[in-house]
Length: 467
Image 1 (spheres, rainbow, N blue to C red):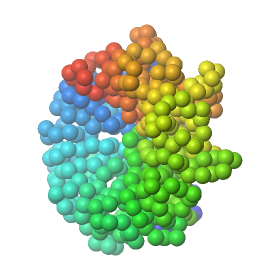
Image 2 (image 1 turned 60 degrees about the vertical axis):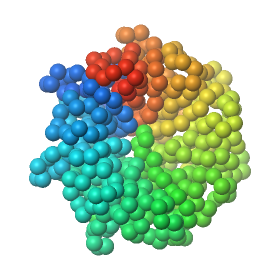
Image 3 (image 1 turned 90 degrees about the horizontal axis):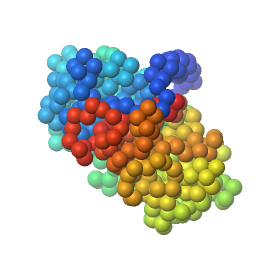
């Protein structure tokens, strides 16, 4: 299980190469203060917008590739009439179907829904959840499974399965919420399966979190205590916005109701933990700063993501004891970042320091964090974080908080040449690129540009270049 020193050196060299490619790609895509439609046809097919809803976006490290799920049937195929996963290449202005068979098996589209995409740094690998039974593998056709599509080889692989040396059988119950590591080698997911290995301490039907190694064809339980025992209650990963697993696959963040994973916790709430696969050690992340005593959160925490470098964890929580200043109602969630190295917790769903730094005056959730942890995107009902807002009170908008400059910025807005006005309807589910420059989000807004091909009220996917 332990990641070898040799492999880590390879990862470092690979990360350097990827970073260079990321910077070049980002320069090629540079259009500062621009918001553009993503769920659309390839330019060669006319470039029209998708003719049905699109949501749950994921973005590659450079911002070049965006994956999403959609019911549209005009984006190309061969796609069945189900929810499918597509990927849009912003540089080539080309969309391609991801939820499909391997080319060697015919390349047909998935015969049942596919959703929850997660994308590797270079855009080559896309993981997703599906109810399809025509994508291969020794699957139980009555449950949802997790697959990874390799765009370079046109090949799909089942990952919600036992290790190769354990027979490779598929999970015997539902699996969902995949998150792929930046290097494309590891996939974290949650599952109700009881046949993927242990030691399990949960009841049948409870979720546990696993990581599948595509290279070694090996699966590993990560919702577990440092002493090796499994979590004694439900544990879940989170792929919304991406980042439930670090770039190298070493660190995995998850939510758990277990009370045997350590830390000064309230055992009656959900907490956030990080499992270090190299050290076989779990750490509590939903807690006060060390300088403030380090006590666990006093309210439920969820929506967890981890930075590519494995140091910073962002999450939303109903807690009122993690620091402030909070201005919303008790029970409303706020977004925080926990620094695992410094053991420090910081409120990020807040006003810029130049505007006083007060917390959002409404519910905030679903964070996404940049590679180095500096930028955090999130959605909020708050109306006091700056604008110009065009939504009704109580509707979500997407913001990015810069932890270095202590500055918050509205992202769900028009391009600067179009007026830079805020979205005129709800925006949510943000995902941020590695550098923090690009943010994708879903929205029901109709004033952010087009051409839109679906009905008013349907979600579309946009990307904002913050410049």
